[in-house]
Amino acid sequence: MERHRQIIYFKDYFLDFFDKQIEKVKEKIDHVLYVVTVADRIPQKFFQHLEGTNGLYEIRVEFQSNIYRIFCCFDEGQVVVLFNGFQKKSQKTPTEEIEKAVKIMKEYFDEKLKLKQNESKKSKK
Image (cartoon, rainbow, N blue to C red; front, side, top):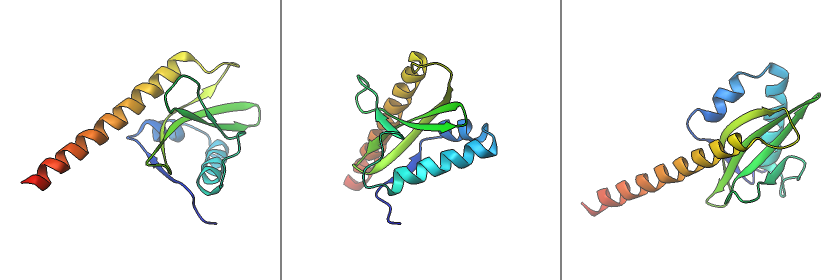
C-alpha cells in the first residue's frame, strides 16, 4: 500500500513507552501506526485532535480491555511526530499527560528551529 504519511520518533519518548509493553500490545500499536501511515483519511477511531492544544493529536489503541494513547502532531503536512504514550485508566485523558506532550511538542519545534537557524548561518559563510 502507498504511504500517505511518514512517522518519526522524537528522541526516545515514544520508544521508552513502547518497549515497556507486552508483545501483543506492541503488535496492536504497530498495526494502528501502519493504518495512520497508509490511510487516505485516518479513521477517527484511531486518531483525534485534542481541543485547546494547538496541534496535538492522540493516536488511540485498544487491546482487550486496555486503552493506550500516543501523542503526536503533524509536521510539514504529512509527517506524524510521535511523542509520549501512556495506558489510559480513566474516561478523561489526564491533564499531566497532555501537559507533558505539549511540552515535548514545543521542545521538538524549538530544536527544529535551532537546526534551521544553524544551517542558515553555515550557508551564509
